[in-house]
Image (cartoon, rainbow, N blue to C red; front, side):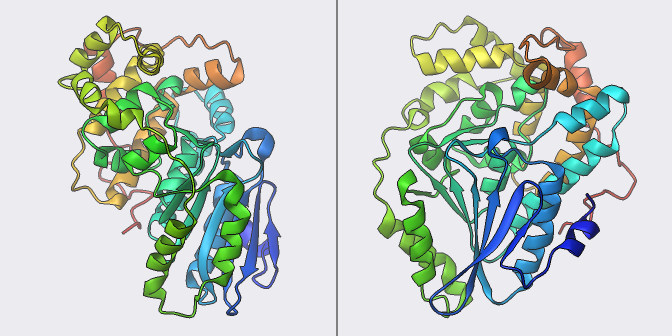
Length: 386
């Protein structure tokens, strides 16, 4: 559904707005202001983000950003299993099968809308609170990282598993993974390691931790805050509130405890990292699982993830999303993406036939082609981001 159609069916005066899979509402505060509330509403699909959801959220968030009565936004997922398990990429797969080696309209529409949504969240200005309870993966992590106040719970399970479907950690991963301690970001991208609450707080994905049972108490506390104070104070006011509500025993972060080992494993050129992973015989189950996933992943994805880790930290957020749109479009047409989605989500045989069974010069040459923007010397579809 086009954004214009979505906008036409939405009325600013409605208390509750809905498309098929996302619900919008406003919560009144005690001082007469409003809190925007968004619920990803496709529980059976673990709230995976689809094109219609992304387009609807762009429209409504754009309105709330300009509405002076809206003081903050809360974003959560329906049910208890997941905030958002990623993007619903089945439509991209089916379109790609019908048009091999072609960047389809479906792929371009989805990735562009998703990245525009993520960028809007990053630059929203007003506080955005994400309730990161349950599974937060892939596209869900893109939404979460755009928020100013990212809450994790004892049930949070967070990962970037794109190496398993022939992609790479997109949705801004080129920005936030490279700002994590040491080589942890590269490790997360190559291994799809699943973070717990303490891990998420250590790497900066989570900013606050609350018990899963405290969501309603949080919403009630938000309504009671003195929102009539200066808007510039709202972010600090929320930091103080979440500090006061914090009652969760966080536990130990494996990533923090094993940081030196991770840095050593991820040191050097990609070929060295791969050989090290093949020869490593760890006793720790967490590392066994991580390296197994790494080595079962797409070698083409390894090359893209490694190249991603080499990007300059001086690139702006707009630069990052422009880079990722080109790379994701190329992956959907020429990379291992379709085969990875087929094996994991369509046929579910979990036996992908990657283009390159191992890392070699042919694999690296193919990765370099994927890294070349489809819009060199042309107007970029995300060129309006600033």
